[in-house]
Image 1 (cartoon, rainbow, N blue to C red):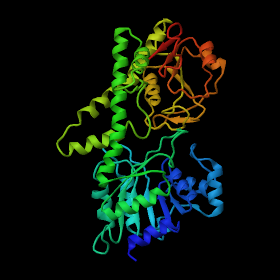
Image 2 (image 1 turned 30 degrees about the vertical axis):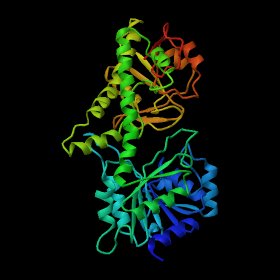
Image 3 (image 1 turned 120 degrees about the vertical axis):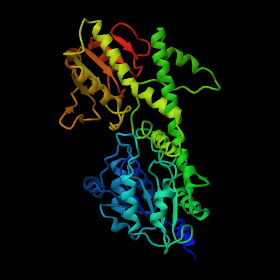
Image 4 (image 1 turned 90 degrees about the vertical axis):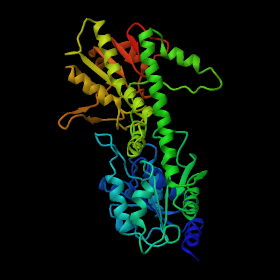
Length: 436
């Protein structure tokens, strides 16, 4: 029996051992899903705290319940380690490490490079290696493939390499690893077959595309589509503001069209792990091919300008009280990048707070999901407990993240002025409430 058939048989019989490198918001849910599907899974992360929590049966991801982790650890189907050597006997490895941007908006490939080199040191014949981290088109073939093959192994015969973009949406209670279709693209037909078999055990539907580069482009198209359309509606909000038109009314009416239109909504700026970052991977790659991704660059410019628009709204709210920004007490409600999560990566709230502090405002924030935030290296803020006194003490309250835990009626009752960037008060623009 060849390596491919042996691997496929192990997957069918749930005898394949699975490794997941990177146990964050993507890796841990994937590891849990594989383990619940009957595989023995070893998760690897350099963060000793994460590894310790998993091995104690605890979850640090809101979307993964402690009970699920504890049950899988107790049955022996899930374990965590900080050592790559503990993965040398697994049959398949999914790489789910971070892929941030540098300050220059170039891809930071250090996590992928480190994981690739470490896995290459323990790879063996018959192993399937799948990259899930969002990255630029060509990464799997240009970075992963050269490290994993060589004179001793032939891709598609002795070792199998593929790309499958993560599609995790933190805080989404409707879609998860199991019921979100999984895209896979392999170096060869055998690689596609092996990756399809593996992910079919954890996802209800798997869509195979012709190559890893096509699969990489799928992810970038998905998030570029969102970034560009959010930028369009953000600019529409800016234009409606100039025209003294309610952009929310315009969007609501446009959404009644049953064809040819999909509603997007303006906000204080883009945040999170994907939409503000992923399109720049595509833009960077195209620059190496002497092509300017104009839509991406323009969308990024517009979305990045929204925190400044929020500052203008805050300034207007304070002007109505005959106050300057300098010295005013500003309360930010919500610093997570979206509702009901604890993730502050790329959150526009951080930009808004920094801009206000630069202008001399006294800024506090309340976010039950985020106990503290780090601004500059020497500046750390802690979340304040919600109270009527906290609201009354603020000259302006700014709704940046519309967590469901907030009592909007109470907030409106005790606040002198509210800048509502999330359209919480849908029918109450005016008075002490200023809409985006």
